[in-house]
Image (spheres, rainbow over the protein chains, first blue to last red):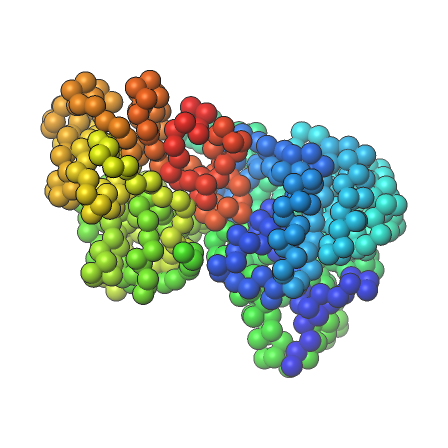
Length: 305
Length: 255
């Protein structure tokens, strides 16, 4: 048998395939299509302290090999989450990670404290990279001092595993990864969406209600892969690769470039079974290539041949 | 009722005119769980410009043959690629998705109103309510007589009225100006078509205190309530067209 497991500190994941926040709901949306518990983990829809209605329609535009979105963190807030969603997701036998967001550092901190009290949530993903909110979000993830401060403050109150989700909309993403590591993050996940835009020529209007939005899908994969490779070579904490992964082969590119795990995002919109297909494909690849442990291929491209 | 993903075989691709075609697909072994108003997310293979699935209404279901039909308008490269499918080709679908129209109550007078591609879900709905003992009136609106599609099929389920914008068949104008609205009284109207048409019908129904359900066509990515892109502003806050709809009672919408 092949060992697919990986760890963030002492938190074990049964395999390196997770689902990306905002693309997998709270898991139950996919119950008809796959066994959620087979996955290494699921990262839940972005959560905030207070309920958020999100941005106006239209929130989506199809682009070449990808899509733009401007959902704007629509969610019912942490009270609703704790009362109605948390009890329901406990049935899944996998690591449930909450993606946390705020407009101010105080909100991130208050939310992290709330999630810290939830026994069955072993990790949070600190989202400092959402491009679709007026305040907070990417503003924290594109300024080194802000990124440092929010990571430090959340670290001070959150005792479980802290993953920081990085924005690609920066000059040098490695600097941000290093800052998060220095402030005690247990892992970094990257990349969030790239800021993009589309115009509806027939209507002569922007395609999205907020004009700009976040680009995802295979269009961004080479950019994501380059950034993951750079960051994996610069930090010691595990790196989770995200960005346009549609297949096992895509996921393997990230692992070979140095990611310890991957998140499947937009692919789940086109194939709700994409995540488990990626998982099966990774396992088949390891068997075919004669590896008994996934760790043996992480960062393999850096080895001299 | 479980949502599912399957490769289904194309039994027939029937071209109706320049813009419309119907794909008849062989069902899996349990299409009897389809409900009128539901849709499928269709994957478009072989069209590099087309990244996302296309949401398409279930147009008709034949339980005896175990087949169902999708009425599709060629609106871009994706649907154009679908229009070239032939008998025996397979099509990957996520289905059946969304809620459904509600059944009329006893003795209610029912009207179906469809415009353009929006007529698609009304055939399945019409057959369904007919099998439950209702003979609906049906108004179908088209740009001109050459664009009229599926007329004979609708004749089988009720009294059909046609409007065309140029008057080349039926009454001239939009569905909302048809004289049937001033001569007959309805208790319940089902409507699918362009937003402007559905909003006009909705306004009429609210004023006349008629129950009205519309089927929306918002842009969507996933179709299963995960992406939150297809939202509609409702009295209950933002709802997803894909799982809370596509059918909405107009009283729930902020129109």
